[in-house]
Image 1 (cartoon, rainbow over the protein chains, first blue to last red):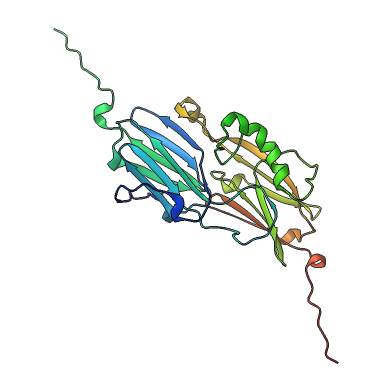
Image 2 (cartoon, rainbow over the protein chains, first blue to last red):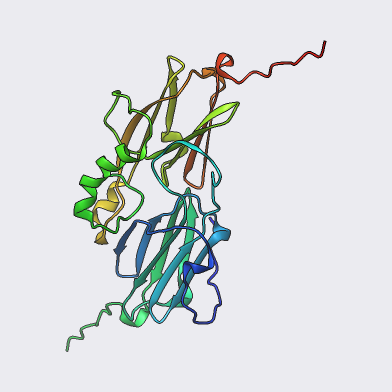
Length: 129
Length: 145
């Protein structure tokens, strides 16, 4: 398993004017349990080195840079375009940013966003006299 | 419905548009083999080979079946599974499809079936189909007599 370290960046808005490519919105599944939020997104053609994940002010930004393939190619048939993937998610107050984990396999990015322990339901013991 | 990208037009519209987009973008008449439009493929060629590429993130390489029949028809099959425990998850948003697909593509010319190769990296499937000898451009020697 590979994990992508959190990038240490100043708070600049990630804009794709830096790269002359089209940008697509990847599809994501999102679910949760009591410990964490889980995200799984389709980002084919992205390698771990090209993945840029930032979490700041409870906003998660995912930017997968795709090396252009077939850039000068003359297609016989073209049904999809190739470009970067970008998506941002606004999350509640509950995420522990230091413990976010990311795994990229076969073009699928899986993120685990642990909730702050203080937010998790706490069981209260009941004393009996 | 298996799709890779989120359409800006909205999820209700994209079902209708996905069928017409394929016809608009392709320059050759589509064969009548199958009405399937998943996965979208890009195809191109050079002197040696035809190339067919599809984005199939999360499909295990074992589940992908690729075969060529009659030297001209490429069939791609595969399945993306989700385990049953996942069905009971506390879902917040579900945008990625699961299931199996089959798509047949008629190639622009005959290929050497035995030499077809396929690679699957970062969720991208690339199939390289060497052109049959009779359709490869042949260099004609110019004699200087």
